[in-house]
Image 1 (cartoon, rainbow, N blue to C red):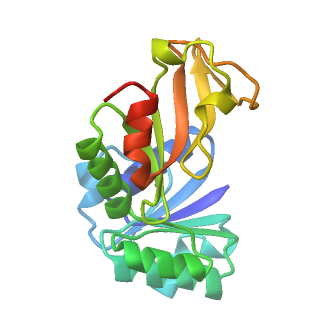
Image 2 (cartoon, rainbow, N blue to C red):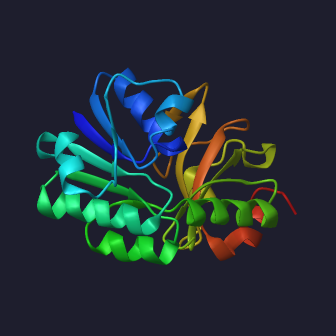
Length: 215
């Protein structure tokens, strides 16, 4: 792929280096020319300008780009750039980094996939504070459903998945056993020491703690 990245902060740098390492071509745009001198260089084109500027985007190869990532520290710049890439240049895949969770939901409805670091990190921190013995990996929506993982206790050794799941409260997604992830059916058995991944309702923490013997 050829990917244009708008913003060369920490996220933009990570994407640039990872994409090049995997054999893709990139072009990066940032309004601050100093960022290119402060950090280890990349092979791709480095441009100075606004991430939503038409001429700058064209220089970056937006007309032949397979993807565009808006990763600046400003929500307004990211969403404008993302819409320009998608609506003016018809880039097939456009993603944006958005800090405001409410804005992120709105732009998702416009068909622009977004990542809201505030929503993600806040939901994880809240889950850690409320249930420190359970690790939260991901939150869906506004955190109503959380993906968690924890080690299967001895009390659940030999139990079937259907003995663990609670309708509309807890749902087993997968387990990790001997370093390999496994998708399970209702009748499959879990073993003590397995790493269990579950989707849970945010308000079901008491049921989870009781099930796992954490009370």
